Amino acid sequence: MGIGGNYGELLKKENLRNTKHRNSVIEIIAGNGQPIDAESIFLKLKEQNISISLSTVYRVLETLVSKEIVSKTSINCDNKALYEIKDAQHRHHLMCVKCKKMLSVDGCPLEEYEKALEDKLGFSIKGHKLEMFGYCQDCKQE
Amino acid sequence: MGIGGNYGELLKKENLRNTKHRNSVIEIIAGNGQPIDAESIFLKLKEQNISISLSTVYRVLETLVSKEIVSKTSINCDNKALYEIKDAQHRHHLMCVKCKKMLSVDGCPLEEYEKALEDKLGFSIKGHKLEMFGYCQDCKQE
DNA sequence: ATTCATGCAAACGGTTTGCACGCAT
DNA sequence: ATGCGTGCAAACCGTTTGCATGAAT
Image (cartoon, rainbow over all chains, first blue to last red; front, top):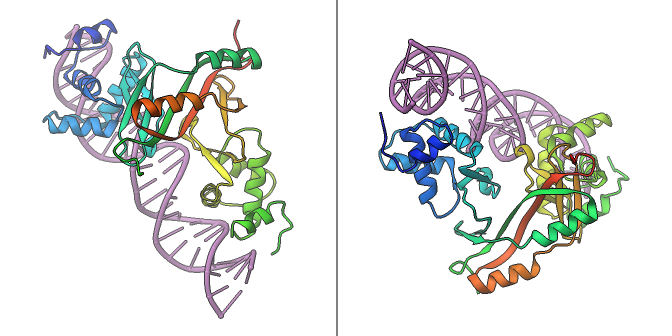
């Protein structure tokens, strides 16, 4: 079955078959304003009457991560992996510990700091994980 | 059985019973230069011929974390929780992705950045997780 | 004597995998 | 026609829990 899906070219470019499931999973992740876990993707697809198995969701995610279409974040709320679309922007997140909402912040304050550390420690830094947490505007107790 | 253990007073101060196992677990964590996971603690104790069950290790860890004697980090290499002694110093880690060695770095470059974000986003930041990874001096490929 | 810590084994929950079938190429 | 993608169910693995026993207070 050929799919007219939005992401067909993206998939083709990565030598991946253009399946309905892959398209749908990418669509959910891309359309979600914040990182999302595998089960939520599964449930959102079910809401759209798209039948998919949870293991397929995991396999699709694994594939998309390996092709760097999606990135797996480390926020690790409740020991669940979270996924988001990988675009050019380096980005970090603030998570509200009360309502679990997440805000994204473009850019990164660590560049010079990492350079200084590299010089000082002889370590070659290739990446980092930074997540911040606290209370969002709505949940802030005065 | 009374134990002369080094950490008896610390435990007493927190209204925790002074048991051999708690002492031993704290000793392992405090003596380990870097964050360590539950199973490694279990194995190190076994090496010292201290018989303990893995579930006890987890329960001791839970207790120590709740009393803020130990902190549970988020580095999450291999989906295992890591634990380290909690002292006054705020600290981050660099992990070598090849040999898995970790370096600790005292201090934190994020204070002003977080203040700026709070002002900009109306978010009240209560903490963060920052881990950096790359290649250590020994594993650096030229 | 009372309360809390421990060992054991079973449960749990997110994730992965083996296998047979089905669809994209 | 071929090989990759998928569903299902079972396995996996770190962690948690229920229950009966044992040790600290």
